[in-house]
Amino acid sequence: MKKILILVFPFAIAIGFSSCMGGKPKDEPIPTTNPLEALSNMEKNVVSGNDAAQAKMKARKAKGDTLAMPYADLEKYLPASVDGYKIDEQPTGTSMNMTGMSYSSAEENFKNDKGDHVKITLIDYNAAYGMYSGVTAMWASGLSIDSPDEKAGGVKFDGDVAGWEDYHKKTKEADVTLGIGYRFYLTIEADNQDNTDFAKSVAKSIDMSKLSSL
Image (cartoon, rainbow, N blue to C red; front, side, top):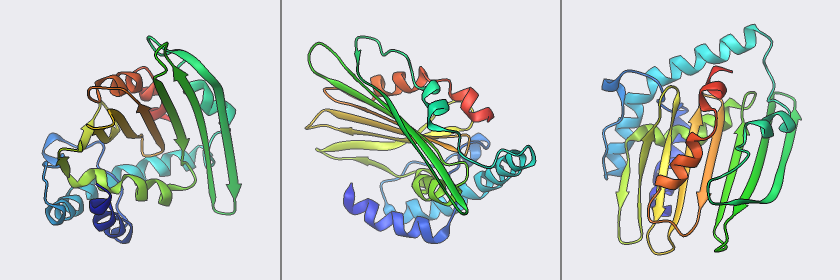
């Protein structure tokens, strides 16, 4: 996986496209295991997504929404509970503002009686869109991976929510990363899993439709 990321990610930054999250079904990336084909798919599929992202950004600026929300407000979107788990660490967060860039993050951790962990991270890239598009660009490539070590590929939720799911077969770690509304970046990390289903269910417990509307 790391080798493929090294190949794909620099091209994604250079092209400067955003992820294809909305769009019609015909615009959705076609799964491929060929990194070069993935790059071609990415270039074709993200153009329509880029237009939607620019429209969202313009609408936010028009109503004066130009900064990332304070981390304390971002924490309110984190789930209060996770089925079968107890809060292990209270939510923590960070806000960063500088000329021309602003982002904030919130994080919380849960643990069950067996010692298994779930980590949830939510980032607001409202005024750092270049960072957001760099992170999400590969998702529009349609790249998928299946090996003795891992199984990974793109994942699509309702609305402007899409991302990447990655299951590490030997360590039984599941990761789901999602871009929400061309602004937010959500990561769910869970250990001792058989697939990514539980991580995706945790993601669905978050009000992503509300985040997408911001």
